[in-house]
Length: 111
Length: 119
Image (cartoon, rainbow over all chains, first blue to last red; front, side, top):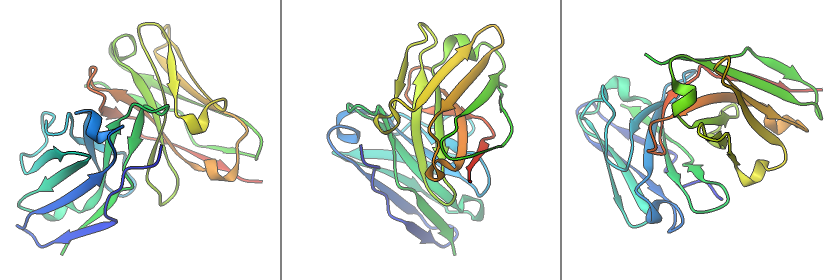
C-alpha cells in the first residue's frame, strides 16, 4: 500500500485560504468516508483536526474544513493564521492488507 | 482527560528487538482500539498495527508482518509494541495512539518514543 499523495508544500498569507489535496485510490479514499487529517508542529505529536472526511473534533477551529471528491480528499484552512504553520497529514482506511495509510505530508508556510 | 504515557528512548543494535510500552488512563484500554504509528527523522507518518480491545485480535501493516507484535496487559492498562530484526531504517519516533470510538481516526497520541538503531 503506497502512501497517499499530498503536495510537499503550500503557502499563504495571513487571512488567506489554502487547500491541501490528498489523492489515493478506490481502495482507500474513494471507497470509504474514513478520511482524517492531522496537524503536526515541529517536535510535537500529531493532532487530529478532521475525521470522517469533514467532521471537526471538539476544540478544533471552524477555520479547518474537509471534503472529498472521488479518490481525492481536501483540507481547507481559511483565515490563515501564523499558528497554522505546521505539517499536515491525511489518513485513510483501506481495503488492502494494510488497513490504514497516511499521506506523504504537506508543509504549510504562513508568509 | 485521557492521557497516554510512553516508555523512554531506546538504543538498539541491528538485528536486535525493541519493546515499547504505553500506559493509558481511564477506560481507554477496555473500550478503544489502540494503534502504533511511527515517524522516521524528517519523514512522514507510517501506520504499524492495531489491537482490538474486545478480543485482543491484531492487524498489522503488510510491510511489517512477522516483525511487529502488538499486545496489551489489561491488569496494568499497558500497551506494548515489539519490533524485531531491527535495521537502521527502523530508527524513528514510535507513537501509541487511541482510535476515537470506531471512527477510524486517532484522537489521543502518546508523547512518542525515540528508537535508534545503530551499530
